[in-house]
Image 1 (cartoon, rainbow, N blue to C red):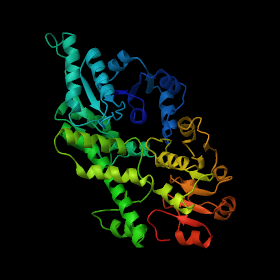
Image 2 (image 1 turned 180 degrees about the vertical axis):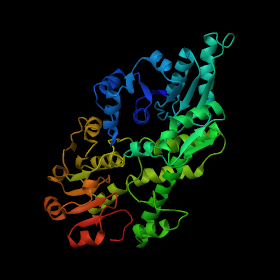
Image 3 (image 1 turned 30 degrees about the vertical axis):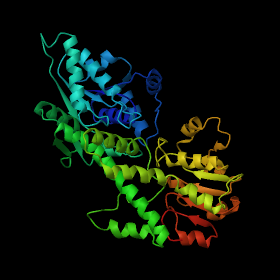
Length: 445
């Protein structure tokens, strides 16, 4: 099949590469010339395990092309997948200008039947706006009064986890298709057939239901995380252990174990943005979601918990202290620092007069750009280098290389052997036996 993917950000690049790897001919469009040049030079602008070899393999095979040529992109694909960014506006709503601009380009340049697929995370009602934008462009061309070019608009939200996006695309747990058009549904079934050979994964529903499903899924997961963080803070106060509680409630099949880990708060490009956007949509519909307001409040407060623990350990005086920080990305296996708890923690520490030596296996360059010319923040190239001259260690991201350090060497390097663990990576009794002060989230110590 001939597919066009509009947007080569996180979702667009993974989608285009994986569809090409299934044998399709994929044209990836982006108006960012620098990004397209990088991609054509074989360089991947994001960190995502397994993505680079797929892109390289399919570029070499001629199945994957990157370009800024809008007319060529519309001409190429019968299926036009819109995967552009929808960043939050000042009021929390999703900024739809790039989605609508993409739809207008299709309407202005199309010469035959097109299925326009919204894969970007968009508010309920976006498919109607996309359809209207295409119709308006056809009116300008005079098509409606002469020859109307048929098209369909389908909602096909993505459910990709950063750090596991390739695996999620290749082996999806569900493929949501929002449409009532049999022709479009048949084409989407054909497109996704290689990814559901052992069982049916496509769930067909109304367009608006599909649009709401994406926001509902991310908001539900965000709610679980915030609830566990609330419980962790309570457990710490009353002498319970959140890990024991997690095992107890996770064993209930109605609850399960996923997304039940207490920590330093959630971040990234999806959960914070989608929680805000769904709240905004609900307010506009006259049905405010009070629970999501609490989820957001809890999460923002949780990002300050590690700083509070560090402050208390040092007698409420961090002036002149140096804190080593392991982990900058909002989660492991990505370089994404958007809304990352590490950013909040670093801000808290620096405001209190401390300096920070931080390390992350993938997000160092992003961090250097973010903290450019900040003299109290040094981004280093190894976990050991972060410990040099540090008073204590804070862990914010659950990278595999942080899970089993040499505690004897770590203790020797820290002036005040203390670990503030925002991911509960270690066993409290084991750290106590090592003579290291240990401050996890919600654990009995």
